[in-house]
Image (cartoon, rainbow, N blue to C red; front, side):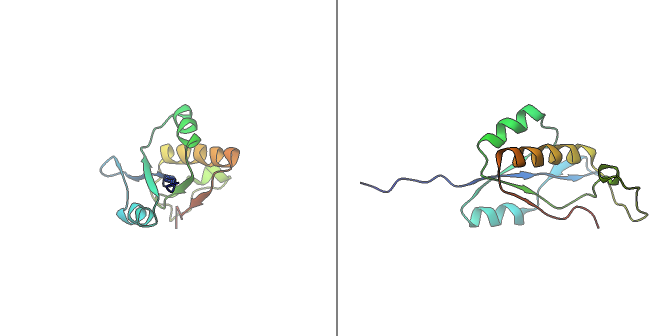
Length: 116
């Protein structure tokens, strides 16, 4: 019997946001490493609805919350720090929804620093 093909793990990545250009983007190192490790990275554009994120996480094997903009301190009950960098409320919302889906569906999640 021939060996059964195994599909690569599907990893969802949160997009980075560039306020000046008003565009989302991705550092190539994130996707290059995942590809090198045999995974299939999928970059999520900002603005996905909760329904879309629920559907996408059904088939996800992992979620990577990439580094980037500062989190809004109001999300964790704090006031803005003088060194606070640019915020991205859309990204905060989307990553919060991804985090909830990961917990609910027990999907491995790895988060990289957002903020100073």
